[in-house]
Length: 564
Image 1 (cartoon, rainbow, N blue to C red):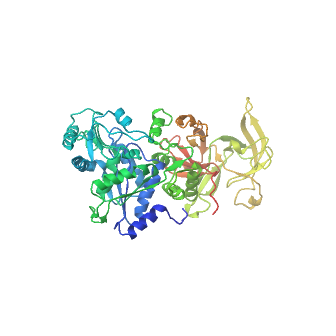
Image 2: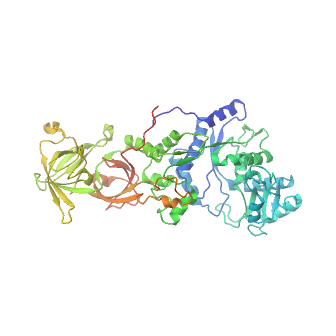
Image 3: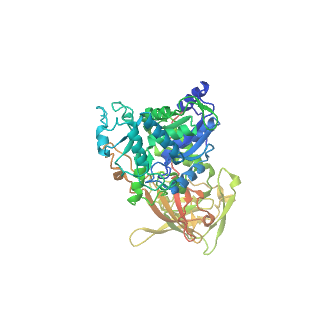
């Protein structure tokens, strides 16, 4: 990965905070919800949180915001930790869960009630929405807003004890129903939910809302900078309200002994990528409607899927680095992600020959049963990668697209009466096209210039085209899965709500091809450049009889870096 000078507005703000003595040590956190797998959109926050801690020799916590047991599972917890480690990060500040603080959060809520900062409301969910008002009209107070704190406290404790039905009571912060910020109109702090929690079991039947639990988790852990995406900007006043009223804004020593004035929230633009959806709800819908095979379908934007497809951690970090941090939302071309992957694999992936749309060639002047041994380097720029030997015989496969009967000008591949060099081997000439009854091509009859073998005295004869190939008798059958982005480009006429209408019918194409015999030693996850075809990674669906390879990215690059 090439080095670039790093600078962003978040680090400028942190520099100011440190210079003013607000904090002694930078302490960030990455706070995923364990209700799905991480996707490329999460990477921007992940790299920002962990990378910022690294820059300032600080700490970064991993804290799971497990406040919604309906959708959470330890499967996602384990998957998220695996993804973070794969990207090269570690949570040196510790591993925590919002549920670690349920008792403390509950006690703070009771304190809010006693101080007149919270009340138990009995409006129905529909009535709460109605009373909340609109962007242009203020809300109105609930009839339960001014009930005595003793009554609210009793009701809150009875909520905790499971005496009420779901939706019948909630605990709300008492702030300002006329606030121009909708988030400050007496937001809900606790709701009743009779759901089994993956860590606390059935101990609790009331659960804190995210906007209450998140700032308290930050404050309790001694987080200095809560870095989050731009959609939380309007939530910042509520974040600060919770932190301040819980007593964490006064200068104090956090649990690690560092001076702090409580966490500061700073927002950055979220990551949006063309031809991709990053909503967990949408991704779950793709799975439930069998549009993809699961969270690790190589077309999905999850890190689990990208790892299976063959994307590298270095490429993803390079991509996030190139996107950078900004304050305004924008959309990034999917081709930039492919560019970063191709850029990384170009230097690290060994070369191999495979034909995914095979066309048979018979060499008329090559002896039946005779095989030559061709030596080819494993990487043109890395001699330390070594060499391999490939058998060459009378019957070969080339790509169908490398032959045309009536080619256009400047077609430098094989044509009738035309010559090409086979990679590392000989020059051949097409003498005859043999067709099937339906007019399709059965095979090509070619003659080989026996004096033209690469490395021999006759190798100096030049032809314009060089093709990859495999020997038919030694070829290993493979399944090649060719991927395109899961969605077509969005147009101005598209219904924004119907994202399914943009599904790309060509997002997966399966080809039955052949590869040189050395491919049999590849392990699942090994990645190669199939010469002139693309980068391919061996998939977990492989069998001994037929390896399966996912095309990571094509060789041709549709993305051009802007000129400096």
